[in-house]
Length: 325
Image 1 (spheres, rainbow, N blue to C red):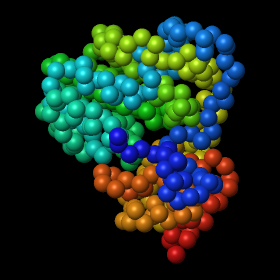
Image 2 (tube, helix red, strand yellow):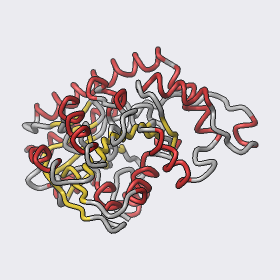
Image 3 (cartoon, rainbow, N blue to C red):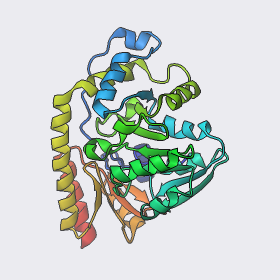
């Protein structure tokens, strides 16, 4: 399995602390408050809920969606829906994309964001993470739609992973996903802080969604996940306030890092920078009970999520001060 953030049990085994501040993911530290659930959410097999689809289509602006058990489920399944193809994956980015396209007979290559334009005409499938995880790079929607149209003429796909797109809604191409060949992945886990729910959505043409649904099988999304997500996607007051708070916290993190001579990039939910000594920095924070995301190879550097409370901000600032001495 590939390495990911959020592995606090590994951190505890290695460093023997219990007072961890987990900054290793880009998950909102202030999650949507989970409401009481109906007994049938646990008792009944989870039938598809048209209300959930309506709420999700309204929230994401997509004409048609398929709920999945986290976008990871779609990332693993999509390569199985095509014959062997020439696949270009934006790099560096979320490593699961490249990993799974490499498992099913496709010819896969990794291409920097600056070279994606040229790669489109040499590919059958192009996968772009937008905004990118971990570097925060973005591609304008007009470029993405042009790439999708060029790929569509020869039966190709543009897969756009918008897992961190909630805080940058103007970047989303989900409203255009009704056209064949454009596939958009959206996550409930990041902005809503509900990663444990294991729920995401795929926006695409109905033919592809039908094929994906057949591959994933029945009852792909649990009843509790459906009930909680329905509330969250409809709660516009919470969404507006959370957008405001995350924008404020993201700017606070950028300013804090800048004060310690760290020029970072990212989104309101996470900040990344190319660190000259990322292993040493990771160890420095770990010995102070702060768990960050270390990138050893691609995107070599450090990614920090947001602290959940003021004590976390204080401890991080002190750790940064000690590192910069």
